[in-house]
Image 1 (tube, helix red, strand yellow):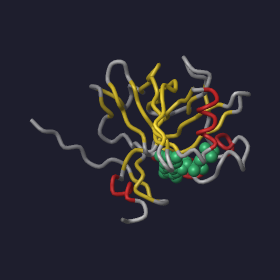
Image 2: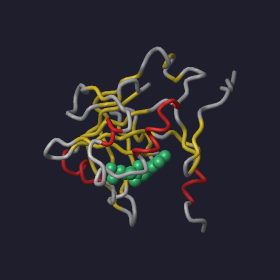
Image 3: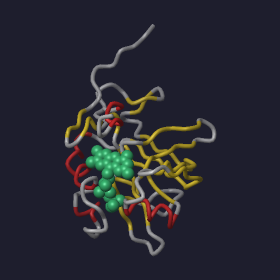
Image 4: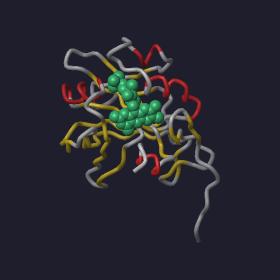
Length: 177
Ligand SMILES: Cc1cc2nc3c(=O)[nH]c(=O)nc-3n(C[C@H](O)[C@H](O)[C@H](O)COP(=O)(O)O)c2cc1C
C-alpha cells in the first residue's frame, strides 16, 4: 500500500473550513477530503484528523463554514493548511484572508469565496487517524457571477489540490448531448 492512498482520489477541490472555540476564537484550515452526502435536507461531510485544532473547535461549538476558494488564494490556503492554529494566533487574517460575518452560524466565512456553506455538526464517525464529521447545511451561498444553471461556469478557477504543495484548476468543460 502506498503511503497516501487517498491521493489516488486527487485532484479534488480544497476548501477552507473555519471553526470557532467555545470561548470565541476563530481558526481555519485547508480540507480536501469533503463531500456532499444528502440532497434534501442538504447534508455534507468532511474528514478531519482529531490532531487538528479545527477538530477541537468543531467539537466545542458545533459550527463551521466550508469555503470554496479560488486559485488566486492558493498561497494563503496552503499556509493555513501547513501551520496549526495551536502555533500561530489568528492565522486566517495573518495569511491574508478577509472574513465576513455569516448568516446562520456565529463563524465567519471567507470574503470573496465563490461559494460557502454554513454547517452545524450532526454526527461523527471515528476512524484511526481521521474522523468523518457530518454537518447539516443550514445556509449555502453561491456567487451568481460564476455559478449559473446550478453549476460553476467554465473558467471559474476553483482551487484543486493535486498532492503535497501542487495545486491546479478545472480544465475545459465537456458537454454531453
Ligand atoms: C491542500 C490541503 C488539504 C488538506 N486536507 C485535509 C483534510 O481533508 N483533512 C484534514 O484533517 N487535514 C487536512 N489538511 C491538513 C490541515 O489543513 C493542517 O494540518 C492544518 O495545519 C490544521 O490546522 P489547525 O490545527 O489549525 O486546525 C490539508 C492540508 C492541505 C495543505
